[in-house]
Each structure stands twice: as structure tokens, then as C-alpha cells.
Length: 319
Image (cartoon, rainbow, N blue to C red):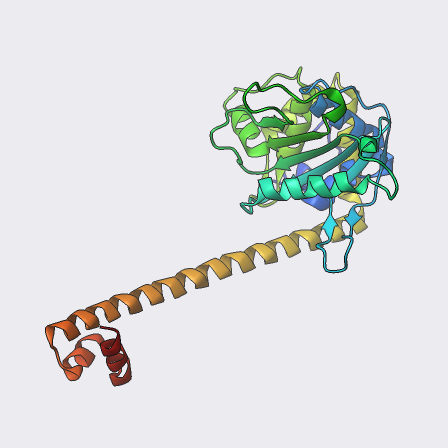
């Protein structure tokens, strides 16, 4: 990242020192802590503006670890979980990589959180709306043009939404890369949308690509002149990015994620190589079988295919 960026009015440290908010550790430090609760409320209200949900006025942070009923059940660890003044449960997840299981994983997480509400002896009528918000650093819905998708319970034929008392499921997907492409192409540059302002913050620093978006920073400077919440969010971001303990924890988390990504890439590579070798082997065996059918001798087949006598004789049993 460029250490010689021009003098800033919003930032008081080099932009290259800011932590990437798409890394779950930094994301949780900004929006998952009691000291920044007012920012979490502003951010959630910006998301819910699209669905018309009543504004959040107060919230409390809940435990992120959820164990199953039985010891063999899968343990769930959420990024951020809050409960609103209306007893709604909200899970916010930041997803850096597409593991191809996003929809099923989302429903699993939603169900675990929804299930948490039902206490022994209580009726199902006590269950409150449960909301999952996924901020994805990848494109999930190739066919959808907009970056913010929402899902509720509807009847298939009439497309009528369930009545309010049963309207307990709400799922959001925010595709950050799709948003940034629209922003870069000047298709989405309205500062009137408060969610746009927050997504610009999330997209400004990309540690994986070693990039700081100077154009986004300039836009945030302009926004901060009239938006006190963005100004406070940027200040909190700077404080998080300068804390020595945070830096160590952040770097450790990044290293772990890079190591995991490398393991996956290695596994793919070796699987491909093994697949290629198996394909070649199968092709050679196919040639040998054709030679057997034509009446070629074991020696002729062995000379042409480099198969062993035992392998050729085993193939004769299959023909």
C-alpha cells in the first residue's frame, strides 16, 4: 500500500495503517463492541430502511457461541449477535470467501438463533423475528443486478407475505464486490443512501489485494462533513487500527485465513493432479483393452503401454 498518500482531513493516520474491515476480527471490533453500540444501531437501521422495519433504538450484545443440545451437535460461532428493544434477534456475518454453501449455511445459522429463543415450558407464540445479515465480499447471485437482496416468507402462487405475527424470518445478502463495481462505474454514487456510506468504509481497504481506495476515501471525507456517525465510525476505525493488541490479533487472524486458503488451494491442486494421472491411466488401460480384443500379445501390449504383465492379465479378465 502507498505510504505516501496525500495529507488527510478525516484520517489522522496513514490510510495504509487502517485494518481491513472485511476481516472478521476488525469487523467485530468496530460493530460488535459495547463502546461502539451507537454505530451498530446506525448501521442496522441503514440496512432495515429497505424493508421498512421499525428503527432500532436500543440493543444488547449476546453470546456468539452456541452449543448444540447434544455433545455431538455442531457448535456455531456467530460474528455478531444482538437483541433489540423489541426482542428481535439479529445475526451479522462478514463473509470474505465464497465457500459455495452460503445459502444452506445461512439457513442453518438462522435456525440455530431462532431455536435459542424457545425456553422449556414456553409456547411457540413466544418466538420473535430472527434476522440474518450476510455481508459478502463476493458475488452470490450472478443473475441479480442489485447488491442488496432480502428474503421473507411468501406464498408461492399469490406472492403474499405471511401475516405480521408469523413474519419471523428475514435474511439479507449484501454483495460488497457488486456494490464496489457499481460505485466504480458511477452507477451507485448517491450519498443519500446511508447504507452506501457504510459499504464504502468496508470497501476502502483491501488487505488481500494490498489496496487502499483513495477515491473512496475522498468520498468519505465529503460525507463526513455532514454525517457525524460516519465521522465517529472512522475515528473508531482509526483507534482500532492503532491498538497494539488489536494489530497482533488482526495479523494472527489474517495469517490463519491465508494458511487455510493455501491448504484449500493445495488440496485442489493435488486433486487435479491425481485426477489427471487417473485419467491418463484409464486412457492407457482403454488402449490395452482394445489391443486385447484385437488379439495382441501380452508382450506387445506391455511394450506399447508400459503396463506390467500383472496389469495386462488383469485387464484380460475384464474384457
